[in-house]
Amino acid sequence: MDTVLSVEAARAHYDALGQGQDREMRYAEAAFSRLIGATGMSEVGSAVELGPGTGMLAARLLRDHLGPDTTWLGLDISQKMRELAAERLRAFGERVRLEDCEGDGRLPVPDSSTDLLIATYVLDLLSPSAIARFLADAARVLKPGGQLAVAGLAPGTFSHAGLTMTIWTMVQRLAPRMVGGCRPVRLEQRLDPQVWQVTHRSRVTAGGIPSSVLVASLRDG
Image (cartoon, rainbow, N blue to C red; front, side):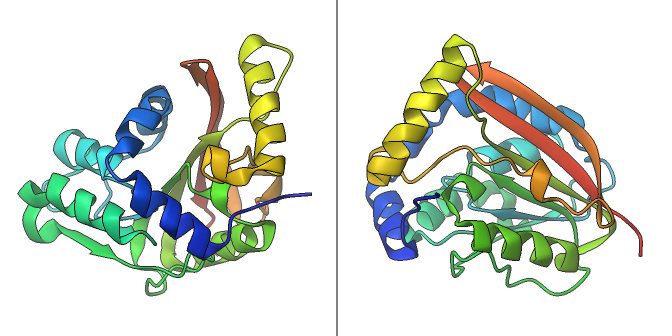
């Protein structure tokens, strides 16, 4: 059974963590690189990121991969994270917006309005019902052919990294605050094949932590 932090507890944790998230997330760099390589960026006019944290991935995308006119919207429950991301992304001016969100998987974004929806190491925090809500909203806010790009903790396997993840999962179930509420989520099993076409799925390990990367496009009609 999933044990997840309440939205209030998650907000308090990440408000307190602040800039320390960059140190904790060093293992994510390899997954970010894999996600970027698997996602078509050249035609993206608008991007939305759920849970951008300090803006580490957004800065990389806006600087090196997205077009000069691409707009980016970051949705985060943590005021501290929004402040840090705003500072990091200041150079991109009006192309960038940061807004609060409910933390329940809902996306305060108009229908069929974005080309790319990103969520890295954030669905790991959500309850199963919130993940289902997120996927339903993802299908609503993406344009036909739009891309959903997700990275997160990968379930344990028979390997050293897999053992690490198995122990992580046990700790998360007993004391979720110790791991920031995060646990591995098998997202692909939740994607309706009539709605989504998976274009990339892989697993990468860095710092002894395995991550899964998944990219899917929204089917037209």
